[in-house]
Every structure is written in structure tokens, then in C-alpha cells.
Length: 323
Ligand code: ACO
Image (cartoon, rainbow, N blue to C red; front, top):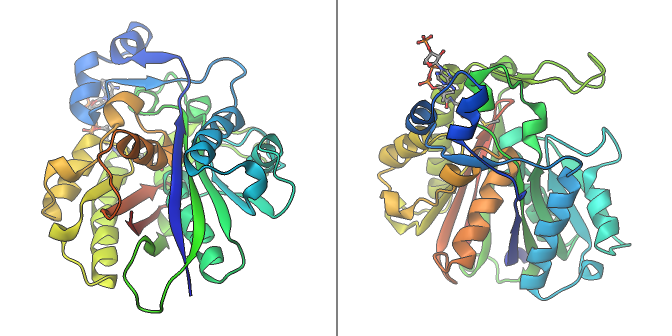
């Protein structure tokens, strides 16, 4: 029986840092409103010509270096993004070429802010069945390209970035504990597709469109779905919240994250937060936060780490990892 173990993490952020105060110079908002209502203080915004693949490649190279392997050792890339460089080919194949990987498969998945957990679940499943041995899973976005800068209820919330993890197949005894991805759970409910969407696309308007969101509705669903996904992961593994060492949630709003933590009785100290500095980077938010907590030594070997995601679709899901 195979299991996927995380052997390296990496992250990449655009150089340009934009504070709330800077946004308030051109948008009808205030530093205080953004900080108090969302927890965001600043975000990174991709420079002119800086593409999702540029960020993805930088994050991937960092993850490969930590794993001590090169691109030619990979047999799978799954890249989660809502902001591909082009409508096709997949951004994953651009990353594949840049990394010097000429075998295996590379493709994108689209589940908006849940994208990284979806991508991780796909790669984990392929490793578990023995189809793939060494996989790179990336969440990468230039989400600010989709923003309507005249809509203050959305444009202040998002940022750009990328995070990546390298997974390696390890053989384990059936039913054994041990390290690696213990479970993933994915959900979607298309009845809520109109709560968060872009008002365009290749087959409807021919342009990419801009983000539209019913913030209050998304907020309610986010709290309920993130709490349910976390509870489902714990129940499936026979664990209690107290046994979790770290929760790495999708970084959309500090109030959402705090409410989920309260419902699950998780102390704030166990929740990894990068929202204040990154904003909501959609599919990149979880791997960016994960890479930070691993590189600063918070997440250590043997820790139980819960990834908890929610995004447009609506989509949501979890991954439970013994680090
Ligand atoms: N600056 C100042 N005032 C603002 C701003 C702004 N940037 N945006 C909205 N307001 C005003 C509104 O106009 C409203 O004014 P009114 O009462 O005079 O009408 C007031 O602030 C309150 O607006 P609400 O929308 O009720 O504010 P709320 O407390 O709900 O916070 C927010 C809004 C931050 C968007 C919140 O609803 C939220 O975070 N929702 C979830 C969003 C989310 O998680 N999205 C991502 C999901 S993941 C993905 O897939 C991309």
C-alpha cells in the first residue's frame, strides 16, 4: 500500500507590496475598514508581465530544492489555479517545461480557493493507486487580474502568490499509522455558483470577466463548510480536535477563521495565519501558509496538520497530514 509523504514545500510572492493605506488613496475605503472586517493589512500584487506560471515556477523550484530532487525526477504536476496564463494549454505544462520534466503528466485543476486541496487530493489518489511516485502540487494565482478595482467590496480582499509541495510515494503497511497524507475529503455544491463567480469566460463572453461576490452569503457558507470539513476529517481518522497540532485554513477572512476555530474548540495558537500579509490568494493561500509554517519551524516532523479549504463553486474540502 502506498501513501503520499510531503518531502518539500516552497513559496513565491510578487515583489510589489500594497498596503491598505495605499488602496485607500484610490478606492472609497479605509485602512481601518479593511483591517477590522477582514484582518488583511497588505497584499502582494503581480508586476506588469508577471504571470501565474512565473510564481508557480519559483515556488516549485523552492519546493524541489527543499526535497533535494530535480524536475526530471517528477512524474506528475497538478497545478490549481483560477488565473492560468492562457485559456490553454494548462499552466502546469509551462511549469513542466521550465523544470526540465519531460515524462509523466502535468495538468491544471480549477476549484477556485479550494483548488490546492483538490489538487492535493488528485495527486494523493494517483500515488495511492501506484500510478505515480513523485508529484508536485502547486497552488498559483495572479488573482488580482480578475478584480474590478471600482468594486470596493471585493478588490481590497485579494492578492497574488504561489505555493508548492513535493509528494513522494512511500510504502506503508495496511492500517498502519505513520507519516504522510492520511485522508482528503472534497465537496462542491453548484447550487451556490452565483454567490462567487466571474462575469465572463471563454465560452460565454469571450473575455475572462471580473470577480462578483455576495460577501455575506459566502461568509455564512464558509464558516459552515470549513467547520464541517474539519469535523469530517477528524471523524474519518478517529481523532479529536485536541490532537491536531496545526490548522492551515484557506486565508479569506480572519473572522471566518476565528469562528471556525471557536466552533471546533481550537486554540488560536494552532492556526497558521498569513492573511494579514498576503490577503486572499485563492488556490495559493494554503500552500503559501504551509510553506511559511514549515520554514519557520512551527510545523515539525510528526505533527498532525489539517488543511481546510473553501471557495467559489461552492467548493470545500480538507486534507489531514501526519508531517
Ligand atoms: N471599505 C469600506 N466600506 C466597505 C467596503 C470597503 N472596502 N466594502 C464594503 N463596505 C461597506 C458596504 O458598502 C456596507 O455599507 P452599508 O452598510 O452602508 O451598505 C458595509 O461596508 C458593510 O458591508 P458588508 O458586506 O455587510 O460587510 P461584511 O462585514 O459582511 O464584510 C466582507 C464584507 C469582508 C466581504 C465579508 O462579507 C467576507 O469576508 N465575506 C466572505 C468573503 C470570502 O471569503 N470570499 C472568498 C471566498 S474564497 C474564493 O473562492 C475566492
